Length: 459
Ligand code: NCD
Ligand code: ZN
Image (cartoon, rainbow, N blue to C red; front, top):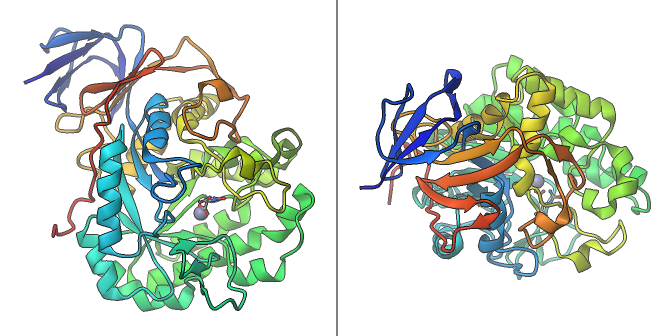
């Protein structure tokens, strides 16, 4: 039995920060108590902060499918270095995760490469059946993802950043009809339905060549987000589905979500550091690293999202870590694919934002507690408390970090937060009691396990 005693840190407990000892036995937290009360091999973390590992509920590993962009090894190296001890991977890998068999094969692959724990989202296609969803749940999916504006290539088994243009190889994106048809089984399974909330009708009407960043904003107006949220929420409310809005980007979308919540919809909201830190003005400096769907918008949108986070209307910050190769991103605005990496900078950027809001400890709620509840992991992860996994992040509050390409572990080094300076540093990271990152170095072997939501029957 391995016993560890973390001594000297200020610990983020469910009741707030406390100076205390944390003991760990065989990867599980056994006590959180006054100094001198525990025993075990001492880990001296004097003067540091001890935080629960982050759970990034929105990453794109690209594995299998696009090794030139990323794989589970590089994704989770970046995650570990940034204090993210669980990643929940999106289903737009190739083949897309639309059946239990594909999910199981992807899980086996991820297990062989992952340096942190991982969970898997399942894909909803316009042709998905209730039986397929049940099988995906039994295979361990944390929930279902519907890309409202994205077609599906039948020959490549791939989700495309394109609307259906009459090509027989392209299956139409899932629509509100698909969600209505599958709502009952999703509600019965009790798993969240996550949506990429951009209404295809609006995207279609506002389509245009993308020459400037103003074109990007005009092509993907906030109405696309607010309409997708209102329509999906009305379906979810009718059937008692837990609807989760991925990467909320606009004040208008937030208003629609607020109305849906007031009307009684079971709705959770996620936004990303890029929408909380950047505005349209940053495009001149950052270029295509800033191209993503939905787009980063105005300073007013950013302020509305920050306020909603402070009011706890938005409960989750995830990254939408979506790396593309440097050659792809070097293309012009029209052709560069949308998406930007971010998993490594999640925790520190949130600590800095929370500090600027007056309470840095809020960050642990946004990246750990809130996400754990969404992924059905609220009884095993997301807190520093007895019985929880010892996923621990040691933060140095006296050392600053500037996000620079040099220190990024993802295959794509340039993200939307490049250049941001924060007044914290990640000192070390533990996954179920074992060090996975310390003093700039990663541990040598992958030891990630698959997580499954509590309460879903196992095959
Ligand atoms: C994502 C990707 O590249 O997979 N891109 C993006 O701009 N966000 C897809 C997505 O999450 O919509
Ligand atoms: Zn998306």
